[in-house]
Length: 216
Ligand SMILES: [Zn+2]
Image 1 (spheres, rainbow, N blue to C red):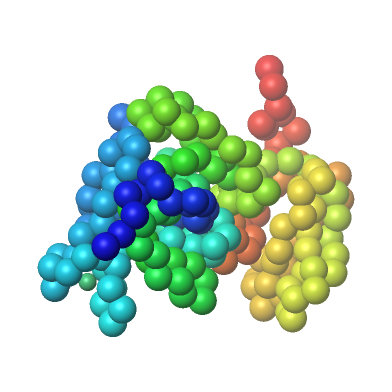
Image 2 (tube, rainbow, N blue to C red):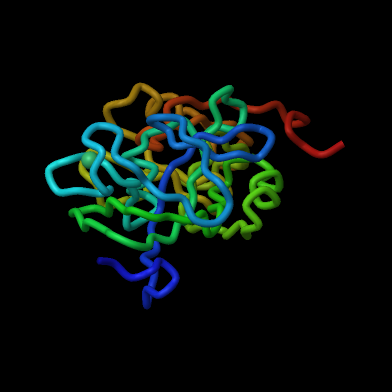
């Protein structure tokens, strides 16, 4: 016996990574299941019971925080990737199994797209699923251009320092050779830096010519 999905008091809000097609569809990253607008119901492909079940891996997986979704799904969120991935806020209904970092859920709905500054126009997915794009504090831009304004800031992490491109602080590993390169660049120089998509640390830097990257 279970309540109809619509009768549940409060849906559970969480976050997932999806594979995304350029024409606006979202797919489960593991099994390429196509998600429909509105409610989607998980099934168990292994044991054919109602999903999710204890002692199984079935159900729609999701995470409590957007950053956890990025970390666990571990995708390259760069805009130029053939294999585009988006971070999405979902609402969970029906049977839900709670885990440390998130949930396995029976019924789920795409609720909002997270704008994490990937450089991707989210309109095709907003229209397909009739959902808004929400600006996220989470910042996953891979390539960043701007003026180097600070070096060696404390970020509260072992063997990590902060640098600043315009007002945005980025993290660099002290063990990375990039540190020496960065310290040879005078503050006020326009640079382009590249971050590792998995840990978001700066792994590459290039000094831009004075006219490079400027408008006009
Ligand atoms: Zn199962």
